[in-house]
Image 1 (cartoon, rainbow, N blue to C red):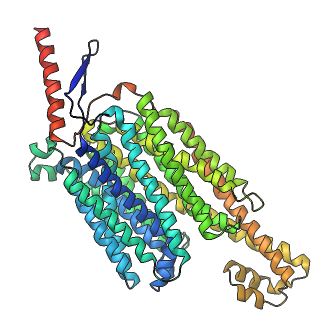
Image 2 (cartoon, rainbow, N blue to C red; image 1 turned 120 degrees about the vertical axis):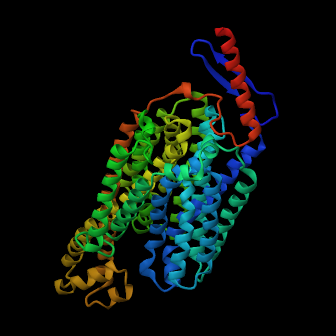
Image 3 (cartoon, one colour; image 1 turned 180 degrees about the vertical axis):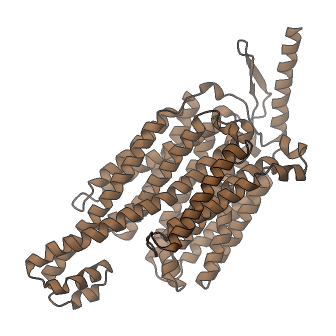
Length: 574
């Protein structure tokens, strides 16, 4: 990739008649990509903060039972907005939607940082969650403003930015949780500052020439082009589906109407969405041209499974290190940050490999093999293992993450028409969020069912042979489950030997419950490794062409080359 002010050139393939244009991007293109990366860093820090800081924030604001809703709001709004915005950005351009959504991020997280009660904080997360509407657009821009041969670098830049956001967020968030008070507010000041930097960078650094559809269609025509029926069905369907999953098991059982009502309604709407996109329209959110190549649907499935597997890591890796490995909270969080650090390295190497080899299947297969290896190792994790092992496990997981996210997006984008790159980025991105939501529900069900059956049995087997009274067993189990040390000591007959035996049994119950989670995760990742073998390599598509230059000068150079080539072709034919 050359940013110097050189004259454009072209080469031709006489046999195929293909012109391979070669124009040179300038600093403004790099500034645009950097601005997008700032927004991506802010988005990942927002996601991490909504989890790492959730309990402390909710407790400070007087509503600890609502801590799970911070992350749920972001997931729900991402799913509801990402595909409609991806389609709309093809008609009105990328910039207005990035500016608008990032503005919501600035305002929303200022409100979060200054909130005095839980209602204000949730309102801030609702506004801030709108910032994720442009997530797919942020993946599309680095690919479409660079030469197609450099798409590996473009997607690597976004994956690296995501890794930085995750790593920085975990370390800073973990540091803030170590101190009492309201230091979590400073975290959200950092987030809104990053959104503001990205906003300024996009405003001044990303001024692409209008696309054909932006100028050839009037506003009424653009509005008629929007898939309003599909937008309603997918947005409402996903919101209800995720709410049902969010409520399942916490605080309501699956049979409760609070779960079944939105869950079943959401599924019905999603089925209706699929039927509408299949039979009702061929130019909707699921534009039929996207599915002429098998790579997009396979990539979308792979990203869905990756999201499902990653959220198992996200929710239970640190938890198991603390409970089973007896690692301190901050050291455990620091080991989790290694996952993102490893993803940064492998994302860069994947970008280099794809650019050099013009192949995407091999990184995907390797990535999912690593993603399968990690949970297999965690199945055998126990407290007697060296604490340093967790660094190696995290490196394996993060390496797979960097390989998969970079290669899967390149595979999806390369398989779609140039004017559909936003939707081809939106489908896998939405699938990852959906996979995370589904994964959380599956994991919670496996974990809660396993723990509720194993904890009482193992504690009973540990303490009853030592002479502990069976009539006091329910009280002991309840006190241990709630981690109430005062209640444990107050139970009659709870000698140090009894408490020690019960503690060891509790650790074993947790270990076995975690083990079931990792087995499920390994099965999903292993299936994805097999599916990734069916991704098709298309080296001929990695050309010098730029699908949507960020600079008018680059667009003029490229059009001039193509006109010169076609003019020479016409003369030769005469």
